[in-house]
Length: 167
Image (cartoon, helix red, strand yellow):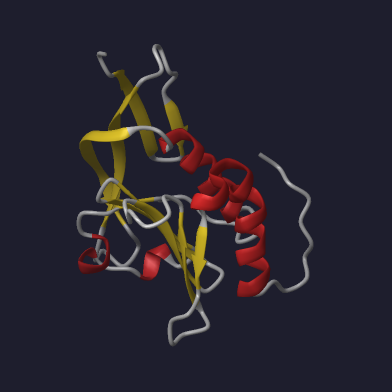
């Protein structure tokens, strides 16, 4: 997905507005943006109103944690600076990140997880990050959907496979 981007600096308020413009047409009034915390660099974007099962946290402009069904997808521009205690149990995006493209990648993943529920996760170790303090992994997440024959989705090292929920 290639979107027109400007090389000028971008700040967290512009990123929040971009997420809002991309997500409001999908989630409507269920979408809530909470930036009332102490840090101006942290924002929570809740996708399921008050349930708390589907939301993302923005940590500045270059790190996003997407929470869905008690799983966390971690997108971090500085991934190679993380260690295993930072990533344990998380689904870590292992490719380079263009900060201006990150919101579009995350929203695309959200669209593929919406209206699905978690079934299972498989991790396969492919190697180590340059520091040696964490593993590089491929992930296969199985999600239950009501949509028959929903096509497998792949984002870098993350694959979402779907199983149809029986009525």
